[in-house]
Length: 131
Image 1: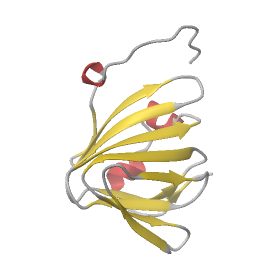
Image 2 (image 1 turned 90 degrees about the horizontal axis):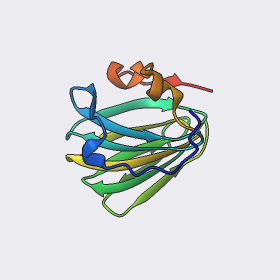
Image 3 (image 1 turned 120 degrees about the vertical axis):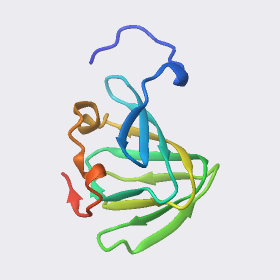
Image 4 (image 1 turned 60 degrees about the vertical axis):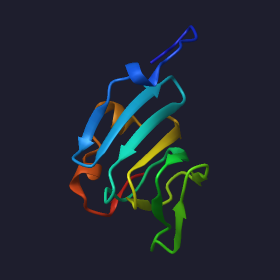
């Protein structure tokens, strides 16, 4: 996608995509970056996975428990106002401890999200590691 002009996006006008019964998202993407608003219900699981994209997660509401690393050796809970950075190709998983709203920023954009080929989220099964 090649944008040549600036655009204003309103979250209330960005389509809400049901990724699974407990997770919805909204995506705004440009050529080299993507921002997504993620809505997770309490108990929602994001299975262990990795991707080449660098990720920044900014918590707006709720609580997410993260397991980071090959064996999930780094564990923490992110709450409103917290920012999580996940480097390229680092395995991670998450669980919503409460109803949660967060922002994910990716560089480059998550092509699997744009193509709707990210079935690992719906599977609920860990170990979907990507290069």
